Structure formats: C-alpha cells, structure tokens
Image 1 (cartoon, helix red, strand yellow):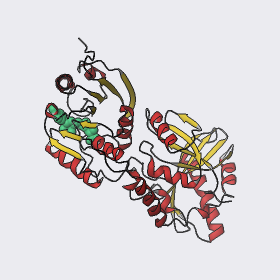
Image 2 (cartoon, rainbow, N blue to C red):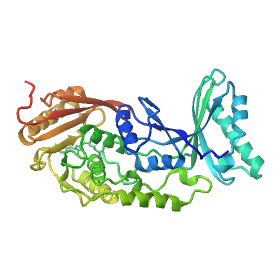
Image 3 (tube, rainbow, N blue to C red):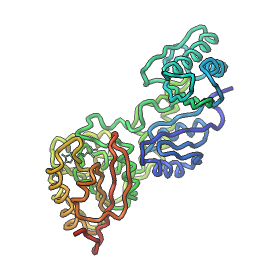
Length: 387
Ligand SMILES: C[S@@+](CC[C@H](N)C(=O)[O-])C[C@H]1O[C@@H](n2cnc3c(N)ncnc32)[C@H](O)[C@@H]1O
C-alpha cells in the first residue's frame, strides 16, 4: 500500500467567510467539491493535485491529504489500526514529525493522549521496519499529521503545507494591523476585480491588498514566491520536483495588462515597508506607491475598483477620531471616485455608518478573531447617498 497513490480526499481549511471564494478557486483548478463547510472544503484528487493546490491556492490555509479513515472506539484500537500503515514510506527514520488533533471521543479526556498514541504507532512501526525511529515533538515545520476523531470515526491526514499558505514569503515586516494574505485575496475576489481595470488602494499599510492584486493581475501563483512546504520533507521528495512544478506555473503566467495599480498611505514608514514587500513579491514595477492623505490618492480615468482597510478602533486609534476619518473618506469617494466601485473592509459597523453611502452588497469575514464586513458602494453617477 502506498499512502500517496491513488485518489484521496483532500481537505482545505479556510477562515470564516472565505469558503465561497475557495470554492471558486478549486473549481477553476478543475477540482471537485465533495463537501463545503464554513471553515473548510473537501475535494478529491491524486497527490500531484495536492501539490498543485499548495502552489496555486490564494485563499486556502493549508492542504490536508487524507491518509486513512477507519473506526476506532478507544486509543488501543486507534494504535492497532495505525500500525499497519506504511509510515516508513512517508517519514525517514532520521526525520521529524508532529501530531495534532481534534478529538471528540468519550474515552479521551485530553487530546494530547490521542496524539501520543498516533505518535507511538508511527514510531513503533518505523523502528520495526527500519531499526531506527524518527524524532517527534511540537515543531510544525517538517511533517505534521492531523487526527480528526469524532466518536468512532477516525480520519488521519498529512498536512502537505506546513506553515499556513497565507505565508507567501514576501512580507517580512507585517506593518500595522496587516491583513492575512489569504484574506486579502478573498476580499479582492469578492470585489470581482480580475486585473482588467484600475485598482486603487488608499490606506494601504504594508501593501497586502495591492500586492495580492498585482499577483492576480499577472496570473502569478503564490507558490512561485514561497520557499518551502511540508511535502518537501517526505521520504524521496526531491526539490527538483518542486522546481519542475514552479517552472510549469511560470509558463502559465501571463504578462501584465495596461491598467494602473495605485497604493497610498499617509505614513512614509508604511510605504517603505509596502515597497520592500512588493520588491520581494516581484511586483514593485506594477504598483505605484505614494505617501499622501487618502483624499489625495490619484484616481485615474477609466474606472475600476477602489478598496481599503481603514483602522477600525479595536486595535489602533479611537472610535471618535476614526468617525471623522470615515466621514472624510465617504466625502472623498463621493467627490473623486465616480465611475469606480468602492469597497471598505472594517470591523466596526458604527464607523461604516459614517461613510454616508449605502452599501449595495456586504460579505462577512473574520480577521484575527474580529468579525469584519466588506461593504460594496457603487459610485456610478446617480448612486444613492444616505441622508
Ligand atoms: C489597518 S491599516 C491597513 C493595513 C493593510 N491592509 C495591510 O495589510 O497592511 C490602516 C492604514 O491606514 C493608514 N492611514 C490612517 N489614516 C490615514 C489617512 N488619513 N490617509 C492615508 N492613510 C491613512 C495608516 O497609516 C495604516 O497604515
């Protein structure tokens, strides 16, 4: 039995609100949707598909490859069912792995005990076959196994990604209250922007929205930037394989279209950070960065998407001061952004009311544990304005 052969279930977790966009990405990659939940989507494919998802997905958090599913009513049964699996084909006897779990079984009070039984089975099996045993511990930068144990139903997965796929390796300095890259990509997908019109990002902070937009516009997949994935620690995986995957993706990348991407922020330090991030993402030549108050952001003719993530009071700034900012931002949109569709992402509904425009669509997300909304304001001539 080879645990990486054949077609298996593949689970892609995502943050709340992101699943519809992840669904779209999976379908675009010709992957079937087996089950959609609020924080994960299950698809099915071969191991090459799991690697493809790691490199291509913009909104998923990680890619979990199902190794096995079976029934076990207690920890001894769990151990007995795991030990026949050929773990030595995944982990080298000199390797390192970690186990994590979500357990709801009456015989388990502390999920760490379930993790321990998984670890014992893997280690005992490899010692028996190879005469030596791999190390295991809490570090999650090599191979990580996920145990989902619900009553008697056990599912065990290999996390093929390692650190979350939000880590694209272009953002070393996060700046102030940055958006996760996966969430920024979902917001851009919600806006409907696809690289064919202008993209304006006032209050850009560390530039996450503008950089993700530039990557989308150039059809550059996030995996071209990221240096390492958990699957590289698998026995027999050659880094040449990863280079080959990246080379294929490079051939599929399209050149930039003639549109403008503009990102501005009042804080010169943030623009410096955003530019450095854009250099690492290799999109610094497509984004125009500018230090200015949002109201001075250039708005080119031709229309497009204007999107921003202002501070919203939970972490930075106080609500009363921010009311003035949101009011001014509403005025700026009404006066300067006709012909655009504007989007504001905020975790404070009171502040959004100050914009003075009526949103015609709204999506709800979670940003670091804070419920946030993305509101859409069409600014075509004759748009409705709240009194
Ligand atoms: C929440 S942060 C944006 C974070 C960004 N989405 C990211 O991923 O890094 C809000 C930004 O608005 C900027 N800002 C605040 N008031 C501004 C103003 N009046 N004009 C322009 N930028 C402003 C701040 O400097 C800060 O970088």
